[in-house]
Length: 331
Image (cartoon, rainbow, N blue to C red; front, side, top):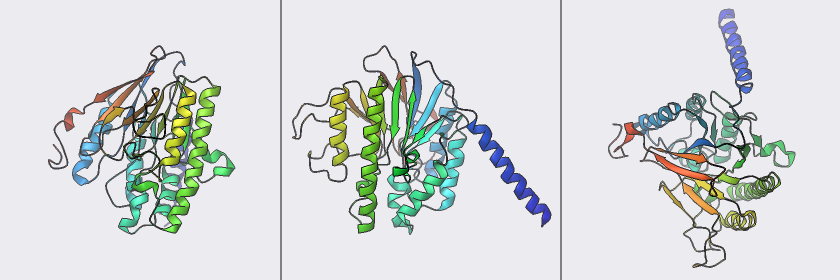
């Protein structure tokens, strides 16, 4: 028994030492006047047949040099919310050779009631597992600010912000499944409080981008907010869409919203300048929806300070997954 306890103690000490070393190894910072490249992924690995496809994406990212970081815009799997699944994803994310940033999605908390779990309990588990300190995940760790650094928003440690190469980045916990509205009074209360926190974090992000004269701002969340719904009739997301419209028009410089959820890769300009269908769209606002299952690929994003658009997006097709889909299984 003493030997077992000693081994456990040594293991705990080793894990603590590794965490301290990782925290001391932030990502290489780029010259704010120079360009850089990062990756976007999300909505991948929905079942056991797709796990090799998702791992192929992670392997492809690890084999790609000079990525400043990787951002996952939510949905860790298709269904099921047992503790071990979160720990398995944490292990994969921490194996990334690049800093790795994640924002929660509906399948990993909002929808967990479908497999017998309390959604808020699962969200709190995610907060403990993926957002335990002021750094990204990955073998190299990028310093980030958390909304929970403000005692008024102590719950919301998953809302992150970082500045890199003259660009302001922020994540918001905005999941699909109607942003957790409309199921129970308790979930409506959670969603209402989180909406207020998200709106405050969004405001602070734009304020920081303005104060620091950022080249651009990129916002990342999971839900498809329904740009194609009738303006003013999208209650679970309407306050966020209204705020995006107001902030983007005032900011003038490029504003990008990255999301997943509907599994339809697209880049467009869907944000109207006014309250009605048929209005002109906000010219400096771009929506980017990442690849989602069954398509297991990723997006490469290059930032060029000399380019008025700042961001250039390129599809990165993972050759091991070319032609693979949900019906075909692993290739």
